[in-house]
Image (cartoon, rainbow, N blue to C red; front, side):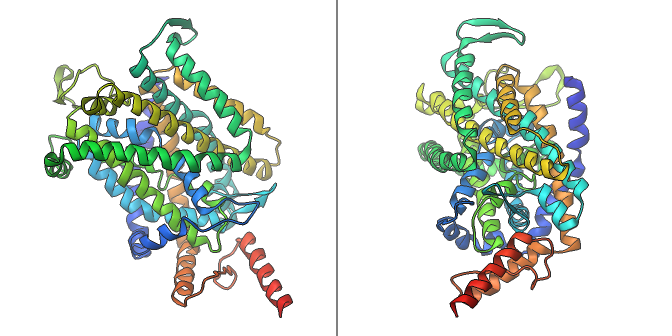
Length: 504
């Protein structure tokens, strides 16, 4: 099975996907005139717009739900893996993916808003919806929905749970070994698993509002705490910082670190971490209540910055400053290009990050990483569930089949249990397959949408024109802009005009 998964990864994560992700980000950056830079101030102000709708969630809640998917194991264990396999230069390529990917996040999340639907008292949307409503390709919507359910419902939850289990073991030890169908499992992992499953069941059976209420508190608190810890490490080693940045930039292009490995691992882990272009962000974006679709697109572009430029960079600086890492190469006899720590240390795990904090804070360092991982991973699992649920809802209408959501909830919980007790390398490879499948379908789809209709560009220009004219209450009329299929916004605009007529 592992050989088959590795074979699939080799096909899915070929150089074609890596350059497609970078190319799409550059493409949208140029077309939007680098909106991710021009509208940075606007992104921040939009975060705190209130929500008065019972159906939708606020922009900040949508950002929190989206960040709960973006900010996870990829920010702690994923960054360590990027350094361990691609060298310090991989961090540079993570930054490149984040900067360019912010424009891709704008495009896909604006599409999520444009083509969302109101269903059973809440908003739903995502790539499956905009592929059908904008392109008229229901088959592509069904294909993406199936891929996302497979990725977010089966492959990806196990990665988050696996890293939590490994982090807890690093803190408390294996505990008593218990024989199971998966081999011997430590009692520590089983206790951690029980806690995750109990809290997970309570929240996912409460719907998007409960998920949003939980994530809007946990995600900002843990992200800020994590960054503060990193800043302390940086401050205590401030004299090393220029050299570390020099190492990252120089290593990004050297043959010794493996130019291809640095790009490949930086882009792969960058996409896994910030999810720009992957097609997951639009689901949360569609659930938000906003005055104009472009507003939530800009908010979601900001979330990429938070994920990679802030949190991933914090992890990278801690690991590199304290030199608690190895870099695996292709040298004979399994030698490392760089070996600073025990060669048996698992690269695809939080170990480098825990060791980095332990070197500064002592025993409290690994404990803090374990706690951060628990909450980051847990909120990411919640986001994965919501994405799977949204796509099941799409399939129920598109294929006219009754798929009980309870089965999706139970599937997520089973995969969390399965991922916790399995080995990291195998689980990470499964996750890469899921991420790659979604990225291929979504990026090709949003590029096709651009060439056929250009709705995201029209929406951005309309928003910028209204903003320049000084309006405070934005409106959006898709018909006037030549945007077809945005039925939700067509209906909303008609209702707004009817109210104005009644007032007169």
